Length: 605
Image (cartoon, rainbow, N blue to C red; front, side, top):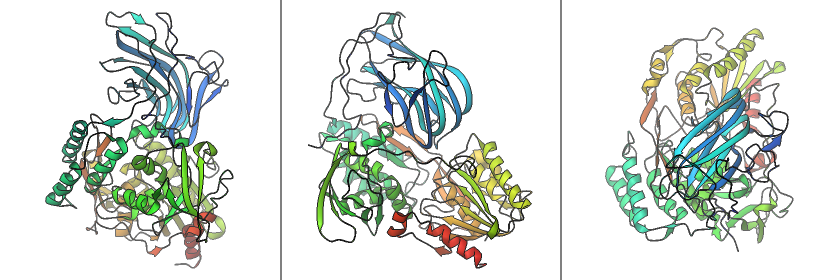
């Protein structure tokens, strides 16, 4: 029998051992006992090279953003009033993720007896980015009625780099200020996580009220049409729905706003091990799902095999449900397919759950006979992405190379998320355009496929190296970017040769702004696929948490528009040369877009 494995749908039974008063209630607070007390998520090693004290410390290192580290759950005793959490952390080259909260972190959740958030999200004990020496962090939290346990994290929170953790301390206090031992009761093993009709209706109406804070909620859907859909979905709410069922009711309403910065998510998914999700690497072509990487433990599913059912659900239904409800800017649908191909496992978990066993109906590559196979998630081992080439890359997102035989430079930027490391980003750009100037390079390939967005101060700085006269970046924007409403002049070493820009359907937000300006001012030729963003988008999102289900709703609060003549809002940036990889290209790992750019460059176009 298949079993759902969300951490928020079930929790392991804790074996509780009482501690004497006045003692740290954490087990193995200095990571000296080799994984016996802490649960490791995705990545984390006990090592001896760098420690704060003792023999060991926890080291977490990664080159791709995800939630990795260790956590421990401790039951509250009777009479608890306050929790104090402290610890030591050291960092090295930690690059913050898209959210300002995604850094190296000592953090916690205050949970009820079933492992659900009892107080919503609370401030972290400590967070850090960049490179820092051992630093002590401490925070205190009031414990409200209904809270039963604390979950303490030592994590890289959806960011990259390396962090070390050591000598953590958790103290429980009663109202009089006396310290308490760990709780003596066992946490309940599971709860049928369903909600009453009243709870779901309350959350739904909460969601609708938050959506009204959007700067243009009816730009792409009339108020009448939106209200009609809202009432239709509201009437689908009934008693005893689970989280995925409720999410499926809400998501069409959120998507109808037509804003990629306005979305409903469940952040609890982000702290699940990668092994909890649908494990196959798949690719959608013409609304059909194909396997692109094989696994020796499931030999039937060779690259090119078509999956037609997952756990009894037709792929056509799964595709339609997810695709139609992925938020997008206006009527631009190009980015929906990019998200499906790059984040299918996440979206599948949102709508259908995560399971410990999967039963698939499939067709072998170029065969018509349908067969059935099954596997458990234990059959798969999550493989960390390869380290970037440090001879060509400053980090995993910023790379540069020169093809001297072709008199061509290739600059690859996979992220503009350097909000608080702008000088770091600028140094990369300065350095490599200086090299382009010194070597008299006359052709530049700018590859920024898959960029979801980031800081306009990064994209505008790069733009200054691509222009030959002053231009204005923003026409309308958040006050923080008022400086970009004034003309930007060309950089000292601005490039004046032939420019080729590689784009795809993952180019959103700030990437769309930059592409619109390059297109409008005719600075280069675009190669690849239509982007999922254009000259305008709504951003500066505010986060809300629904009271009962604890789903997270992000709603844009401000419209940012670059200084170009209006372009169609229902389309992204259209390439001059449309190149789309085929299924065979994806399976073989061929970069047909880069190959075309190099051939075009050689032909002198």
